[in-house]
View 1 (tube, rainbow, N blue to C red):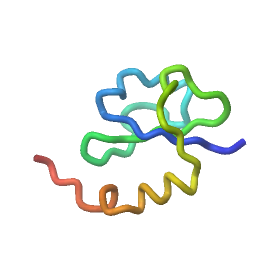
View 2: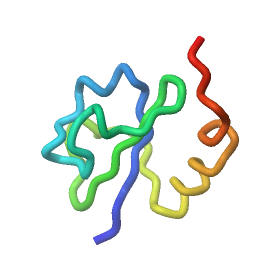
View 3: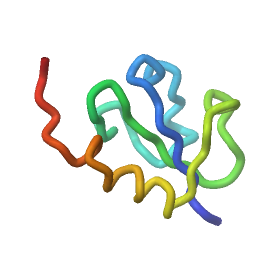
View 4: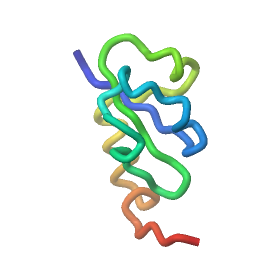
Length: 75
């Protein structure tokens, strides 16, 4: 099965059920600014219902963009 990816605001992290995604905890998420993303396989976890889903090619395009590759300086 293909992995699916969803970009989330950091305020959504508290809603993640780590049993339903491939990351193991909030500490294993990759952040840029106030955004992060999760990946999953199979059925969409309920806490991700209504969120835009990306395939591998799409997420790689997003993550290779300047917004995710530029230094993430704290404010």
